[in-house]
Figure (cartoon, one colour):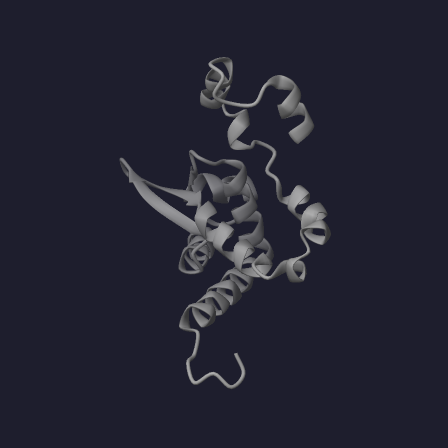
Length: 149
């Protein structure tokens, strides 16, 4: 980038977004709430339920959830009279991708253990809809799935 008259705006935006996400997660209650929402994907939870389960006053939890939402880590939807909060997994993916984009100077063997640790416990191939595709020959066989895990 040195010597270039052009500024990479997307990289600056990614940097600002990543800093905002880390700042939001740097507070223990927000980190706990976000991890809790990740565990409750894809359904999400109302703020009151999150507050109750984490033993935090409702108004305090609402403030924390708003901070996570501004950082791009939480989304909301209205369900009747409640607002349901969900972890924004695309926002999390964006942050992790930004951090790993230039990982290991192009040496995938160095990154392999990190990528293996980031493999979710429930990959798309483990979802019930995918299992029906496997039986139709559209996915991995059981042995290949076991090798992958």
